[in-house]
Length: 124
Length: 286
Length: 205
Image 1 (spheres, each protein chain N blue to C red):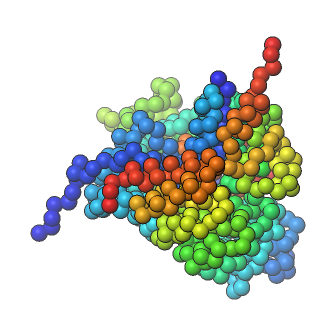
Image 2 (image 1 turned 180 degrees about the vertical axis):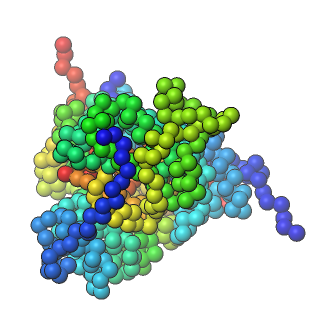
Image 3 (image 1 turned 120 degrees about the horizontal axis):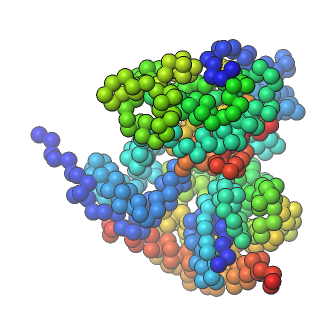
């Protein structure tokens, strides 16, 4: 079962993403801020990480950059989720190393589809 | 005549949604995550606090926890839900990481003859700084190549006096391997062991109050600081101040170890996260 | 070798050149800026200089110190001085400033109304988030008002997040109304459900 780390400081948002992902067959672990997300991502193997941009202590861009610097998480698929819909923010997201940039609130179908695509395993 | 105080058992237990609110808040505030298995423990403490505060119920009590500007009830709650038991080699994985990862890195950057400085604060009755000394003498092959200064500091002068005295009961020693007890302790009473003179004489004990910095006049000279299970009790502003004080006393590249449920994430973003085999620790940027 | 006692050598505090603290606050070396910041915190007019430096300080350690020094000396002037940073493009800066504001609840309360009615929705959003974290007694009422008047989805979402923790029975109608106000936004429907359950879950008052 693919494992997803959901990083967001808002409890309701974490619950929402958890509900969508569990319904799609993923195992979900939560982190309530960027540093905790970094610690968890570095100590457990995840298949995907969902990162909110607007978090205190360590914003989402900084978290993704930090993950890309560590060998164990350099290619961890990362979806950045933000309230910002400007193109420049998406560019910042991709420049930080995110695989995908989604705008909040995310629709269940969009999240499910993208999570499945990013965690699809190569057929041996 | 004073009316009888209510007891916790007279108060209705919190409902599931009330527990959800509380668990979220406690997690955000302290870093401690109360899993369902520990909810009965938390519920009982809440009932006790509601009774002690003579509150009408959970809402009134939680309102105090959330909105009291002095943070008194919040502090009472935290005191009630933290278990503060101290013994030698507590959270041993961090000492292991000290020897396998941190000290080698620190040593590699030292000039010959340059001291290694390790600070334990708060040190309470001394178990932590003595543990640091014992563990590294027992496990670090390079201990003889360096002058290592270990300091233990606390706000409680009685605790410091007992730390200097270095006498402990069996309960404090229960997690120590027998070889460590033989090497570093002598039995001085029916249930009392004392740290051997050589080790006692090697650790310096001083007063320091992390809630009222500055905590050191020496500047950023420490290579490794253990500050475990203290910051959890601080409010946001005090924690920020404490983090800056710790930053100011650690040398660039030096390390900081916090308690298991504490994470830097609740303090400040000024340290880097380092993931080692045995522990995740914090490092002052170079 | 091995364990030794302290030599008790006091290292003199880092002294900058005799240039005034304001100039050293913009020095190329972060440690120099740190010392200048501490000096300015205690000097008349110094806090305004610290607030002004916040939006342009590139080092996250120095930024954190600037905000810590300001948070330790809360006042309405300090809060007002930090507000422009909430409109920054820099997510890290916005987050750090919002966090600092929430740590000055009494001073923030005086300005929170202006924050919640700011023209920039990002600033309003940070205001709503601060309401959830700062111990401001009027927070539940303010969150209710935000929920009632906001048209933007993410602001209503943030208000619901706050009301889930701080709301009461009186907020239930506004919470339920969100479902019909924003049909076709699954997240708001979900958030309203969670919020209502948390509010209802308490004993009746």
